[in-house]
Image 1 (cartoon, rainbow, N blue to C red):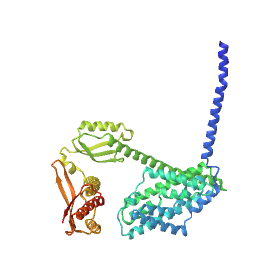
Image 2 (image 1 turned 45 degrees about the vertical axis):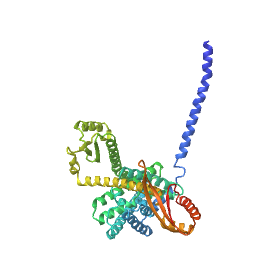
Image 3 (image 1 turned 90 degrees about the horizontal axis):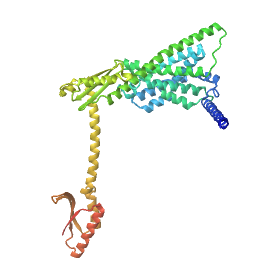
Amino acid sequence: MANTEKKETKEKLPGKDNLREDAKEIQKKARSFISRLLDLHEHTDRESTVEAVQKDISFKGHNAWILIFSIFVASIGLNVSSTAVVIGAMLISPLMGPIVGVGLAVAINDVDTLRRSFVNLGIMVGLSVITASIYFFVSPVKEETPELIARTYPTILDVLVAIFGGLALIIAKTKRGTIASVILGVAIATALMPPLCTVGYGIANAKWEFALGALYLFSINAVFIALSTFVVVKLLGFPLVRYANSRRRKRTAQIASTIAIIVMIPSVILFVNLLRKQVFESKAREFLSETVRFTGTEALKSTSSFKDKTIDVYLIGNPVPYGTIETWQERMGEIEALKEAKLIVHQGADQTQDINRLSTELRSGILEDLYVKNQEALEDKNKRIELLETELSKYRGDAFSFSDLSKEAKINYENIEQMGYSNLISTNFDRQDTIPTFTVTWNSKLKNSELKEQQEKFEKWMKVRLNLDTLAIKNVR
């Protein structure tokens, strides 16, 4: 019996070994497939990439004029709040070249390229701001459009777009046969030009918060595009620039590394802060919608400040007990992103005074929201009324032109002398109805038999012509 069990065990072992070997083989093939699928080294042309990037850095002649004209186009688009025009300007802008040059130069320790990139980038930025300032100074339209306001402060989305857009750009440039569509797409996505135009708007109209915020946004985009270039070039193992003097090479490497660190540290700190701010605001909205609720009370407005770590909510209706507010605060403390935040509830004991307690800006916002909602409700009601009137007119007989109908009737029935129309309202005391009523005066010379035949035909024709089952015809002779 024991020998039989041992024999069965020995027979099973080879099967298990085969399964294990098959699993290893599948894993090996999957790893090989993914490696081939995502490999960048095979089609990377390092020499051509460096030459192409260095060529795009230069800024004179044609590039200078293209930049000036594209800045004018972008400024016009921002001025009239036209997204299509702004996108068109970004397609023809040559701003991306020096930024990619900075990232490449730092990665390969090329001091000459780095110096050229910074000089050309500075000239490009200066020329762009001067051109935009001239346009907005001359332009008669001075109002802040949504397109301008959107370029005054970076968000976490801007940072992510700059990172992934920069990665896509440098990977496209390193491929044999540059992918032009990718480069154009990145130019649109990263939106380097609109912030510079907004800087010009801020300078021309002395709105310094606009100018500083837009310059901040441009700097963030530029830094992360250069940083993405630096990372990809390092990963692809681009060769370092060789110098005859080894001491100079070492010093250059140290300078390049220092610049990379100086660029990376603030960028990482900014990214983390923007991410924390975005999470804070998102969690605050979620908390207000799910937790801050009380029977008979409505939230008029709510604001959150990541800087002050406060969440303000303005309530109207039944006063919320202090104990309930404390419970809300405790629940808010359970949310990681809102632990340090303070919930401030604004409400009045006398509800008639609630609106008066709010700030002018807040009241303006509330009234604007109410106006928009009422406007939408009014438009919806107007559409319903129009629909009901159209349907009702079918039953009242208003869906036709009496003038046209009378002319048509005279052509078909030449013995009609006069024709009138009215709506007769009748009731049987259970139900009220509106009946279209026609009064027809016929030629007195008609014989009775002929008149009766004409009247019957006319009544049938009217029912078919007006598509009505119920109508009244009074014949007069």
